[in-house]
Amino acid sequence: MNHNIKSELSPLVVQPLPGIGDAMWYLPHMRALAAQSPTKKIILLTKETSKANELLMGEEIIEHYIWLQRDRRPQALQINQRHQGVWGSFKLANDLRMYHFETAWILHHSIFYANACRWAGIKNRIGHTPHKWCHGLTHPLLIDKKLPLTPREKSTNLLEGQGLWLDHYDYPLYIIPQAQQDAQQLLHRPNNLIKVILGIGASGAEKCWPIEKFIELTKWLLQQGCQVIVCGGPHEQPLAAQVMASCAHDNLLNCTNQTVQHTIAIIKLATLYIGNDTSLMNIAVNQRKKSWVFFGPTYTVYSDLITPMITASAQVRDITVDDVQQHVKEYLLNCYQNALV
Image 1 (spheres, one colour):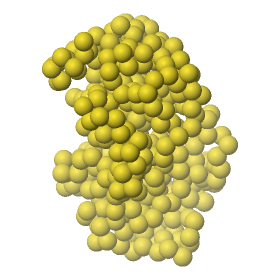
Image 2: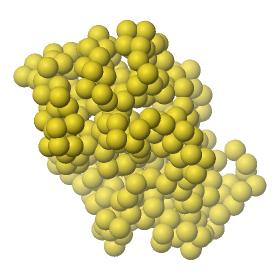
Image 3: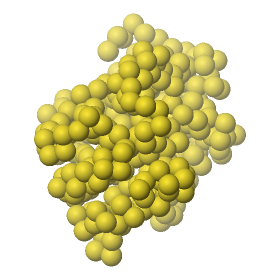
Image 4: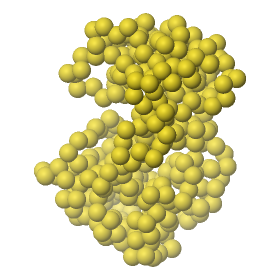
């Protein structure tokens, strides 16, 4: 962290959720807050696992990133936990104090962040809370914790309560030109090919459709003349290798080695998304792609573009390949006038 950076104009925005998909959820909020800033930018406090610095590379709304070192997930134990616990909140306050912020927008209900901003001497602290008394906030929005609202919806209510409406800021993510050019070259097959993104990974095993079923579905899609693009991150590369080995074909691409910006550019060129409830789904929806998503016992359908694939058992593994085929075939037949035979 560069402690020489000071910002008396750009507000601090606290978005502590850890995933790429989480960062996608809050993109309209960040745009709206940057638009009302005198600098037209914000300083973002978030977790490095969100890949926000890569995700938002094409946007011009971030002045600086501050990495939050606080993540209690089992898969993140190797990450520095400097901001964890009570002492961690004081350390975070000390880090924030260096910037001389005047305003903080806290897009999370935890008093941890409200108190850290208070101890950092930030004058205006705006956030939502389930507590009737939250001294860490100067402009609190009380939201009953019994209300079935997602974290995103709570933050939307917070901004709208301050006169910031998000509809104008909900549009596809900007992508850097080089990534778009590279994606065009990678997906150089005829433009009339139906391009299908497969999202084979997820944050937990219980959210993953079995790779054997992905392989069976891939073979069917290739038989229909589709171009199939396997996407994901480094952790999905072993799974992608299984798909490639079982379904070798000129129209099958393994794109699990791409950067975040390149992955977004590839999804932008695709026709539809099929896969697990993962960050790729959020990117596909942001890029206005129809998405068939495999859901387990808990899920949120926040867009008409999402068709949830669920079973009575609420187990992802019980979703059949035949069910997916029927859903996808009907959609493609309707949209592309008998594209499938």
